[in-house]
Amino acid sequence: MSNRCASKYLTMLFVLGILLPAYGMWIRHDIDNMLIGAECVCAADIDNDGDMDIVASATVGDDIVWYEHVNDTLWSRHDIDHSLDYAYGVYTADVDNDGDTDVIATGYLADIVVWYENILPNTSWPVHAIVDLFGPGDIVAGDIDADNDVDIIVCGFETGILVCYLNPSWTPDTIDANIIQAYNPFLVDLDGDNDIDVLAVSFASDDVIWYEAPGWTKHYLDKDLLHAGALYAADIDGDGDQDVAATGHDADMLVWYENALPDSSWPKHIVDRDLDGPCIVWIADMDNDARNDIVSNAFFDTGWYWYKNALPDSSWLKDTVYQCPSGPQYIWVVDMNEDGFLDVVATDLSSSDVMWFENPLIGVAERQRENIAGNHLALSATIFRGPLVLPKGRKCRVFDITGRVVEPARMAPGVYFVEIDGKIENKVIKVR
Image (cartoon, rainbow, N blue to C red; front, top):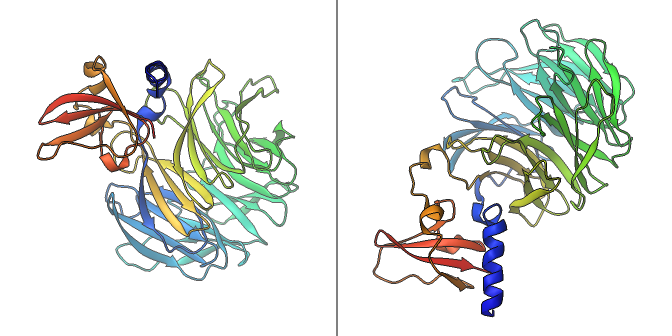
């Protein structure tokens, strides 16, 4: 590399790299590599010990399981149900109002929606039927009728219906009797009138829809998002109302819709138009800059990604969370290690993996670390490829530009600082 090229590369890293590679590599932590047909996942404190546990479903294994969070690298698997035929949707909520977290699930081939009663420390999970329903899919829970208990919203994937079952008698309240291949119901007060509206997508009809409560008046955000697969609602543009992000599985597109209510238009903005088979989407502030970012995955791109919100600039800065050789399936965003930054919990359908990816940004517990970049940007840089060779017999540490310690063997392309015997001695740029 010529000096001119090196200088140009260095400039690019400091203009762009602080936003992308300087964040460092997301660290993969395996929870389970043997959940056959790993499908949905969610996080909740199942055992009331103050940390986040994981609940997951497995279509091939017919399993509903929960993983006890022993520490950030050690998980204890507990089986809830081994025989829920094609266990698909899973969600957590306190269904019986007894102060602990229960588990709700759908059996796609069992044609049933059930909830499992948490009676820990007893290891059994009594199962209670909610409804027999042909081909149930995704589910979500919330207090729809404002009576202080948890109701269940279910997509009848095979029957073309979207139904709310009202706790405690599970009386059906049909939201839509004609939604073909419904996915991903989402609860939010979209119009700011202090009741809960419902969002959903129709995979077969390419629709993104919201249902206005009370009465479930049907409104379309989009009728042309090819094989709409998932959605999520939160304030993206910082104007105080709830916007919506969605994936078009065969549009190969990730988009967001700007809430312009009471105007019925929903201006559509492209986040990524080249995402091969996007699946799930989540909106959250991943870098603690008080702006909501977007997290998504793509089945055929075999990766999980997050997009930094750069509004009012229309571009979104894309960063890879993790790339795998098989099929990313589901996402749940939560702070797993209580460092103040959100992490990503995920399933991989093809490899039977349940895992979480640790956000590499500096968390609350790490804020006292030295501001490496601020104090040492003036150092001249050494550009290298391959492994970083450190002096033998010296105490060495490598920091990325955020101040986080990085293992030399795990260095991605980017800017780093080398501490030798307690003093920052070198700035290096790894190019590959």
